Image (cartoon, one colour):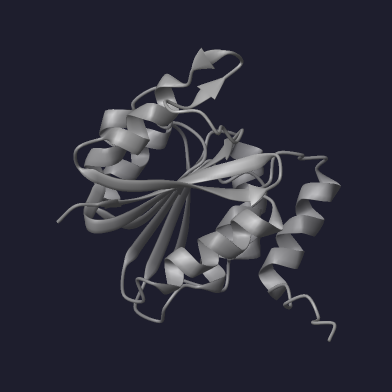
Amino acid sequence: MNEAEPAVPARVTAAQRLAAELAFTKSCTPQVGRLLGLAAASKPGGTVAESGTGAGVGTAWLHSGLGAGARLVTVERDEDLARRAAGVFSDDPRVSVLVGDWRLLERHAPFDVFFCDGGGKRDDPQRVVELLAPGGLLVLDDFTPSTDWPPRYGGEVDELRLFYLTHPLLRAAEILTAPSASAVVASRIP
C-alpha cells in the first residue's frame, strides 16, 4: 500500500514561496517542520517562540500546530526579511514577528516551546535553557548525526551538542531528521 505524503499546510507553502522569491536557502526541512508542528500542538495554550524567523517557513510549521489559546513570537535580525515573513501571518493576532536581536524574546518568556534556530543556540546556550518553562520543549536542528559518545563533529567533541544533551535541567535526545541531519529535542525538568 502506497501512503500519500501528508499535506503541507497552506502557510508553509506561502512561506516556502517567499523563501524561493527571496533566494533564502536556510529554511528548515519538511522533516524538522513536522517536528515543530508536533511540538507546538503538544502545548495547545502555550507560548511558542522561535529565534531566527528567516522567511517564515519554521514559523509556519510552528503555526500549523498552534492551539487556539496559544501565542507564537519569533524574532529576525534582518528587518526586510522579518517584514516579509510577518506578511504570511498578518491575519493571525496570535503571531508576533519581532525585528532585532534574539534577546528580544526574553520579555515573552517563559516558553512552552522554543525553536532556537538563530541567536542564542551557540552564543548563550545557558540563557536558552533558562527561557524554557518547566516542562517546556526545546528544539535545535542543524546537527550532523554522531554515533560516538560524547558526540563528535569534525573529529572533535561537539561541545555545544554535549551541553544540551547533558544539561542537568533538561531531558534530551538527539533524533535523526534525515540520514545526514539531526536535531536535539529537550524538555526542561519541572
